[in-house]
Image (cartoon, rainbow, N blue to C red; front, top):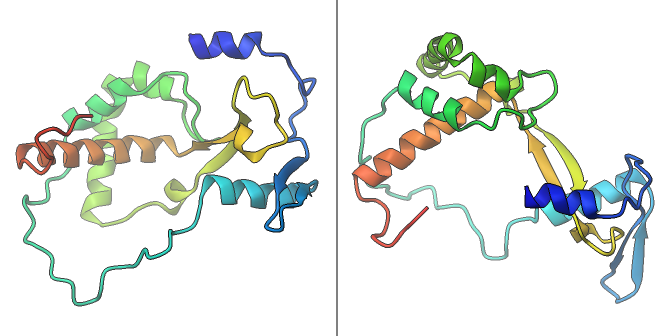
Length: 191
């Protein structure tokens, strides 16, 4: 509610155009650089939104010995899928070409048993549809910023396949539940 009010009160500086203004930043030599083409703007935003690995970050050695698993694999249950569907915001955007969340929310009694069978088959055959891995990233302005020529005045919205979002949410719920059952979180860990 507050976010919507803030957006409504802010002045429309772009006249409703769907374009990012020319971006400015300080270069390595301290001089101001400007990105005018879409390719340059995209590179700058990717660098801002998805920074590379930090220095010193390494992969574990090949001879790393891991402890025994704390729990056995369990397939997702209809209850877990239903919990995730219940948490969906009905009018939140999904990737183009996929069902909106309101379809799952309002047709849960029909869809959850079918989703359960689909997700179960994917687990049995160890298959992940390639299309489910694809996302769309939309760049939007942060409301109330004084200067939209800076990369930091924008943020990414990542839209994913709605089936994949539900399945991944149920898997996350399953892992978090097991982590709590087996006391894997510190005693003062919240959230």
